Length: 312
Image (cartoon, rainbow, N blue to C red; front, side, top):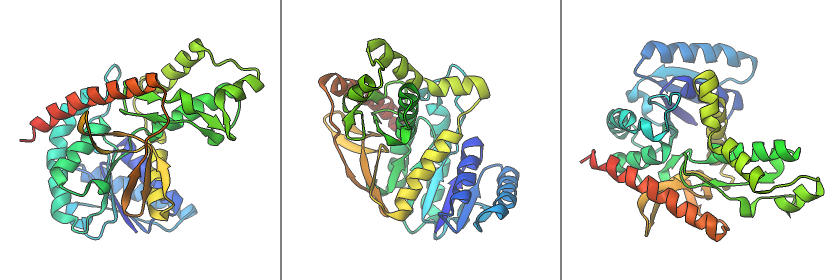
């Protein structure tokens, strides 16, 4: 198994380190416009994994993409304080117009593409448009991390393990994302019953506080340390593990949809395996959540169409 990471900033290098420690792959190729940086990251990680696994970490360029099984794109401008993910669109669109043709030129065996660059839903659609790959082969990290943040925040509130909580965030990976409160469960028990048993109260105020903590957590992290990277690195590693092990996991990845709202990428529960996307699922939603999803997708559709117009 050979995995390539394009972009070795905070996100790309942390993903590389996380993957190197996971023993999921024999080789990791790092590519960056700053060749000195990618070489240094490869060298540093190589030294670190002498204490664990024997993964071959190398730096190179696009010509080394031959026989790559999975390519992760993290290259792009970092989200700054008071910036939304959408604000990064124009900066990263121009960058992808350079990256994607090189992938198409040198990666001849249709590797699975995982997009982590923000705004991730739009950049995933841009990748599809430029690459002309089957839609099953192009995956955005989507709301996998947002769903983890939802579980973590709920677990902290209820004082139970977040691992045991089934909670989903769908739609945009961004400010319009949709938290599916109506279907949260743990141990085959609805979250409201668990809260009542534990003498906790999930009222409208609690929901608003948790929603805010989940929806805007990236802003808090960026405010405090300048960037988010540990969470997205673990989320990406989880997606890759599901692909490599072919365990048909259901994850809230971003992928291409065709429906009455348009042709675009956003997150829904999706079965993935060794060849990429297998099937998208429709989660249980109440009417309010359904309307929120429609609103989220419409917001994304407008920005997506504007971005695609610049490719013509």
